[in-house]
Each structure stands twice: as structure tokens, then as C-alpha cells.
Length: 232
Image (cartoon, rainbow, N blue to C red; front, side, top):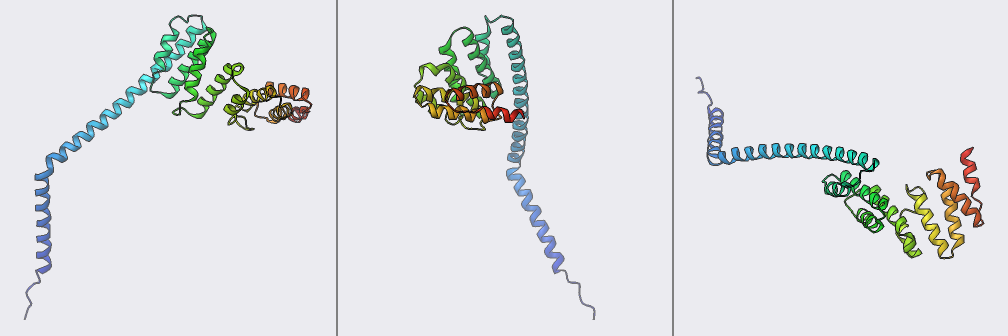
């Protein structure tokens, strides 16, 4: 005798599909407007962010062009409006534009014999933790060079200690100032050894290395072999 077809599995599957469809319909009915609103907000925010980034990029490009024109004006002796323009550019959201504007402002202050402003500007750059280290280190070197005669020798040594290491980009300049501070303290032997270390560092500019050889020699330390080795 033929057995009736087993409809249990088919029936369960249909019930399950109907249940899922009912749940989806109820979910969309309850939250559909919220979902549409969220998508619209997301698209609006994304579009706004893209526009803002593009706007900032165009703004920074214009500021770079302004800086280039300023350099031409300063080079041509037209500096009347330069301080005001540089102060405006120093408010830029671009770190490179901001830093370049301040470095230029400090250089212009030196040219105009306003050492106090130059020192303050370099100091603000050196202490700005938001800037990359090369910017801060350059500012610290220039600030210290301007203040050198007014600083206590130990203050110079302590301030430049992180940069007075062989292999550091500013080792030559920082080392020279540190060695001179040591001479002020009467530590001739230590100063001579530092000048010799500067002479041996091939990453230091040749002019500084040659000068260091001469000073080290005057302090009783022969560092001439360092330059001879490089020449060979």
C-alpha cells in the first residue's frame, strides 16, 4: 500500500520562511524610516568630509603659492607687508605652512634687528610638540645660537645634549656650541675631545669638520687624521 508523502520538512521550511518574512516586514515597518535617515546622514557626512578635505587641500595649495610670492617680495626688498602676511599664514592648519611661515618670520625679524622676536618665535617652534622633530630641532639650534652669549654654559650643554651625539643631523652645530660652552667652564680636555669627535663624523659638513680639527689641535688633540682618512 502506497505511503502518503512526508510533508513535514516542506511544511516546516515554508513556516520558517513566512516567519522570517513577517519579522523583516515588522522590522522595516518599525525601523525603516530610521534606517533611511541613517543612510542619508551617512551619505551627507561622507560628502561633507570629502568636500572639506578638498577645500582644505585647495586652501593649503593657495597658501603655498602665497609663501612663494612672499619670498619673491622679500628677496626684492619689498618687506612692508611681509610680517602681517606671515602672521596670517602662521595660523594655517597645515603644519608645513605654519612652520615655514614662522621660520620665515623669525629670519625676517633677525634681518630687522628684532632678536627678541626671533628668539620667541624659534622657542615657540621648538616647544611645539605637534611638529615633527626636524622642525623642533632646527628651531632649538637657531634659538640657542641667538641666545648663546646670554646663556650659562651649563644651560647650553643641557639644552643641546639630545642633539650632541655622533650621527645626529645637528651634531656638528650642536657639538660646536656645546664644546664652546665647555671651554667657558674651563673644561678644555673635554671640549677638545668633542671637537675631535665632530671632525671624525662624516655626516658633519666639511667646513665644520675642518674647523673642529683646527680647534682640537689648538687644545692639544690631533684630529687631522679624520679628514685625511676621508680624503683617501
